[in-house]
Amino acid sequence: MPVSYHQELEVAIRSVRVAAHVCRAVQDDMVTPQSLEKKDRSPVTVADFASQAIVCKLLGDVLPDDPVVGEEDAAALRQDEQVHVRDAVAQHVCEVLGDDSLDTNRVLSWIDRGNADGSTGRYWTLDPIDGTKGFLRKEQYAIALALIEHHEVVLGVLGCPNLSVGDQKGALYWAHEGVGAHAAPLWEGTAVPSPVTVSDSTDTSSARFCESVESAHSDQSQSGQIAARLGITNEAVRLDSQAKYAVVARGEADIYMRLPTRADYRENIWDHAAGMAIIQAAGGKVTDITGTQLDFSYGKRLEQNKGIIATNGKLHDQVIEAVSAVVDL
Image 1 (cartoon, rainbow, N blue to C red):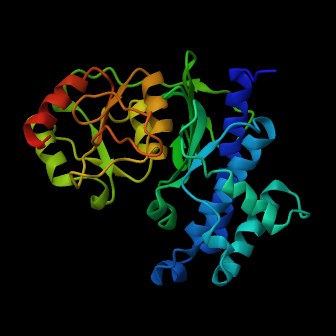
Image 2 (cartoon, rainbow, N blue to C red; image 1 turned 120 degrees about the horizontal axis):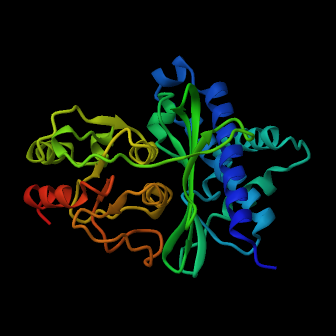
């Protein structure tokens, strides 16, 4: 029997919620002042693999035939020198799922469910921790899950453990084709969701734009020039991860620019699919920097697109015009 979109959405939301719990547990257990001083990346490595294992396991329980295009695979964990990381991943997964009988090989097999290449007509794409440096700083990061059918993103879920919704820390956003975008507290499964809509701003001079914290992810000198051309005087809001998409979707920013730092760079689908679905369902628009629709028909990367522009929709044409005047397309 075909799975309904209600079931798809339910399992996607549950998967992201449980993955957020394992990420928070790893962060609480392993991210310390000492680990930050040593620039120890093992906490985010453990959380990345544990998050992917949980999402792939929970999706597979309900949708066993659906491929997953994930960011990770378990090959590195199987190496002898990774035994401590491997054991930590398995331990955290077992604790969050409440099943002490799980063995490490089963956990690794769940991670490897994320090995699909995106060549089928229907698949999920997952970034188990988007914003690894934000995770290590205990700032913004996201668990991002999207469903793609016939090269179109039809469902997106973002779990943002450190983004506030109302007076609570931890926000969950989701969108499904035809039902709009919604938000709820991340940690409370019984909370009533609320609709999410973009801002109604049409004046670029008062617009707020956001971009990546890491300058390696986007050309911030060019984004500053674009903001000047648009007459934007507000300071850029810098956030890690697809939390930027959530901030635009809920109207707290009007523009998100991700400008290529290299002419040959192409974005990964898992870095944008979920966020794009949520902004568009909230009434906004997402394209590349030329104004071209994002093309998900080339597997793991957006091979036919350059960079990302996401807006409330009303400002989109003006932003694209300013980009074309600054960026060598």
